[in-house]
Image (spheres, rainbow, N blue to C red):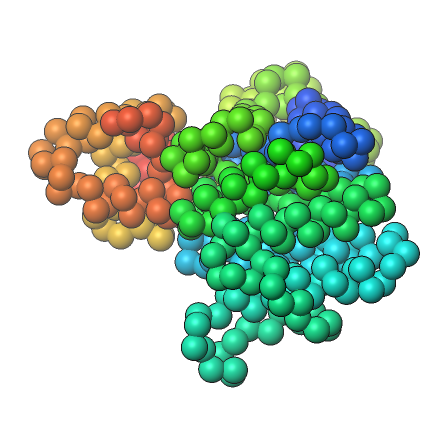
Length: 396
């Protein structure tokens, strides 16, 4: 098969495998956009799931939907070593520019931009020299007295209120999309929850759509006890067999090719329905096949190539971030689960390594911060990366 026409290569095709089987989430967001635009109450949205299930791609699609609906929209990726002000300011700047194209009062837009600039410039610590202060690139005068107290919770409520009011002027809304939401700092999580609570009370047309690892709901709940009422939680998981088949068949048909039934069986067994793996094995099978339909023999021939690529780009890039002590902890998890994606009691890991549980806490806590594991429930730990245990058992 022609590798140039490979519809499973990154960026190829009209609808990537990560979006196959996500019609329910897309339809639900359509309803959110419509309800909020009409001033109806609606909760913000939080998508959770393991690595490789397509949360980031889905988040990008939701942002595109908001833009097509005439909303202002901005997307950020949270980082554990950075506060929220700078990336959020950039995202809201873009959202306000979207709204400005529909707004008939430039002075009103500039006023909100001035509030945003005041919010952004508080990212510098008090007493910082001028050369050390971040300039957000907003070409309007600072509007003092709103969203610039230095208290992120107060400032975020005031800023969201101003931006939502601007959207209401043109009978539309604003969507803020936050990837890797579990990496927000505790103060920023608390402020975000408080701002969403205030917006829901006033029915302001601004929604937050977050995406993160499975323990994200626990992060939000630990910050504000009322967080479960603020967000609608949607778990994003593996594709079922019909959707996994569709993710392979539809792109191939656009290139006048097909898979036989045995090939689809083999690909589903190899990928377990995880969208990232569906794409990786599908790409390798296409490159290995010499004719259509692609067969199970082609899949078998291509599997080592797909697995080698995953070992470097998907598994290896994460494994390399772990210290020797952390790798020991990860390998113990893999051995105890025999390579399955099951949670493991932390006490059992300590017993397996013949160590005290307290001595393993630093490694476990560091792995949690790096996003390589998550607390499935109290006293249990699991991999954030599907098939990671299987990968570890193949490593010397």
